[in-house]
Length: 392
Image (cartoon, rainbow, N blue to C red; front, side):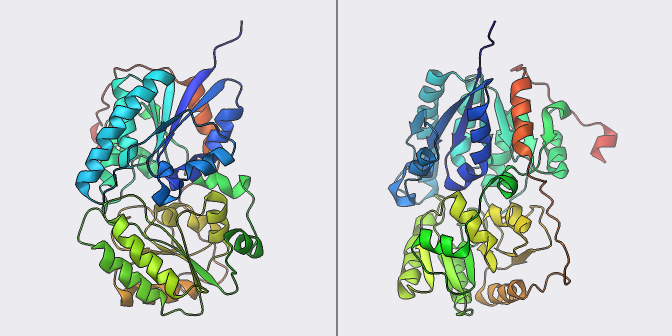
């Protein structure tokens, strides 16, 4: 008798998250015991952010549900309303698909809407990248909330595994699988610099920086002021070209876009502004960059694996484990410029020193597939209380 395939829904709402999930999606798609159901929402469906759902389709995936949620707004009220629209849309989508489990990565507001809906519908959630800390963004609280809504957990380090257990999740349901984005190191083909330049229609004739800056949704970093400080610091390095990607759909992101576009327009041969690179071009651009600059989680988690320095600006990623090649700086022109100089000179390490990345070896997908196949769901979770020895 043939066993019924397990239906595995995977949610994606942003270009970055999709890139991290790419190889897991391929592995679910090709596994004879599993059926992939893909839910696409958020920035993917927005022309403003590049309509990146088209890239998902070009990569050979069938999108089972498109859930429109983004408001044409740049405020916390708009974000909250988008979450409400998300719950409505995900309720309909998940009731139609009836998956055996749903995979949700990270800490975005779109992901929280999907997670709370799945929990109410008694669909077990497999949560990736829980237990991490980003004190400068409301993503931090969202991540921990998704942890409590979820049934299985795949964390990126042992320290984060322990934190998920500290939140009351049973140890047997929490696995340290490493960072899923590192799958690309061994499984993806990278472009050469000439190939990258041709793909971008932008001649890369000098050393270059990859720059991504997102608004800080908690704390005192005003998006425009911090981003202007970054742009002025980049002008201190005229010998470097700049690949400048758009911010995400957080509060204040749309206020940054005109500054970004004006900066690129003022120096068209030096600066390329692009809504979304796509995963292949992003990873290829990182591989050959002099430095990655901004405050994206990718700069903390994936970039060190390429032996490329990261200049991490401000408080958005405060609290995350980071390799020695991640250089933290305040969001002022002087501090950013000084830190870029250290990064370019590789002044953070000894000659021939190998930088260790704390986020694993790039074999996460295989472990997640195993978790999905072995899943035995009991919606009545028991809160795991730490004993005195564990709490020390």
